[in-house]
Length: 323
Ligand code: ADP
Ligand code: MG
Image (cartoon, rainbow, N blue to C red; front, side, top):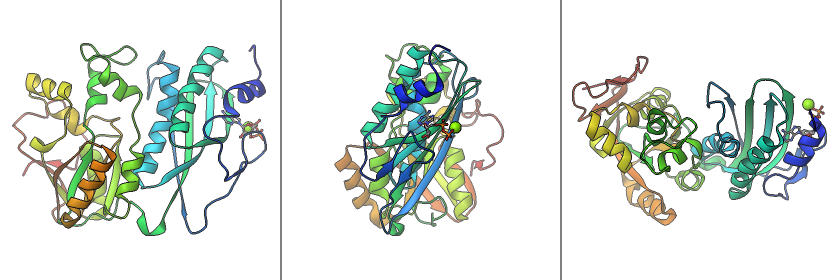
């Protein structure tokens, strides 16, 4: 190792993100000391990315730095929380300084965009593994949870579904997806956490989740945890041009229904709040669609799905069924 663990921390991780006034002590001591706003709840989430499991060897380190933070911020978004701090546990096979520079730049750029300060972490040697924990704040009266959906709620989704999984399918593990101008690959490698949308939905939506494992699976979590079911209309699913073209060509709806890594928000809300939510999303310039309704019968059902259209779906989606 040309540079020591101490030098890695000092050079790449000691001034990362936005310096915050609520950080009494950040990187460099035994503990970070942080001031939480009175009356707010602390929202905490952690996620790990393992090379060979969550990303291919050789993935652009700048994109990895972005994604490792983005997937965590997406959890805060789904809770309607405002991001504040992050910690980073990094296990590295070696001390490749070009890799570290690019990784920390990707992490820092996204952290600055959302006013997050990196306040601590751990650096070890081993197979490349990136664990990020984030902390944010939420008003106790405006929390977004998975277990509050009610029959009659409308189901909304931000952005478009399936693009990241389509990028993977088209071979964009490391290189840009063929024939898509790089847009799908951006969706896979640089997901944009829906923080503003989550904050806008807090206090309006009944339930929310970020779509990390695919719409059916994640909406299925809302349903099972709320003791309800869902009926979605596939003609209403928000699709990018590339995704729509792929479905037209193959007749296969499995990617937008079950593909992971979208990091959009799926939420449910009382129908009378429709105009308010639409106005908020319009104010933020966020694409979003209503895709169905919550009902009493358990499970997630799809209306309008042609026979065999889910031919690519692996087993295990026990929440799926056609009425
Ligand atoms: P300790 O041995 O007391 O756990 P470390 O030597 O692991 O301390 O870390 C020294 C300081 O650097 C601590 O403040 C820790 O939070 C911080 N740190 C270590 N690795 C990272 C990292 N990858 N990113 C951010 N901060 C880090
Ligand atoms: Mg340590």
